Length: 287
Image 1 (cartoon, rainbow, N blue to C red):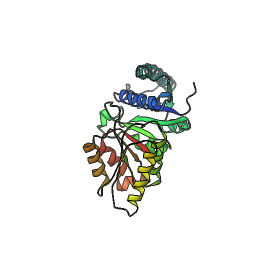
Image 2 (image 1 turned 45 degrees about the vertical axis):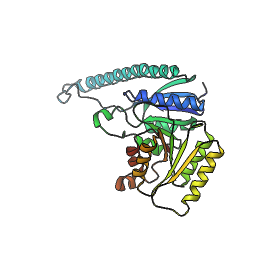
Image 3 (image 1 turned 90 degrees about the vertical axis):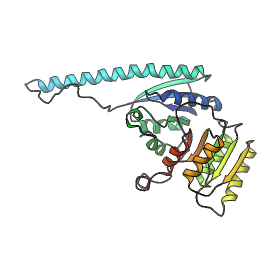
Image 4 (image 1 turned 45 degrees about the horizontal axis):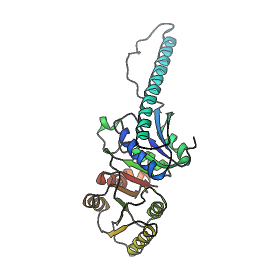
């Protein structure tokens, strides 16, 4: 099957996988694109200490222990593969039931970031959950892989929340940067949001060329047939975007993501993470 320009849904075996599947199916249908579900099995899973091997002694103890550990590892790998196949097949059936005509699955051992980077030349859109299996234990509001994955990829990434609702109102957080201008051009050219009203908000420090930038964005989208509302609201972007999402009933946010270095984000904090926490809706992230 030719999966060039596919929608790639990254899933793990958690309750969030169904939400990822539903949004991925929605996007694939809107874009008339094939859909693939990818499940990456960690090549170095955490292993519980079922036995204390520290007291192993005797002439053949080391060889026997190595054999035992190898057999245990192979058994875990087989169980993970078998469980993954069942899991992926259920998601495939879910997407087919939603009307997606072309759905494939793939399972890989390895590192998530490396695997997605290798795949991205075939992908139009990545879909992943903001949270995954580890969130149950950590109670994180953002999964640990989100920033790593977004920084590694050069394709749009739809980071979805719990519960599926087909987006009906889209908000673009626009600042006139090359990334957000690219986002406007992408929306204008893609069928993903065709027919949906677009709200564009510029926040942060006031800029002299802000009105000119907003007029460019409006004209670009109106020429593509979109109904557009633009708004310049001075103030903290996290507060402004969060309030706009709530007051306008926005279903999906689009914004530039992680434009600063990881070191600066570590020291100063990440505006992307702040906005994701504030908006609490599916977000299309651009790099």
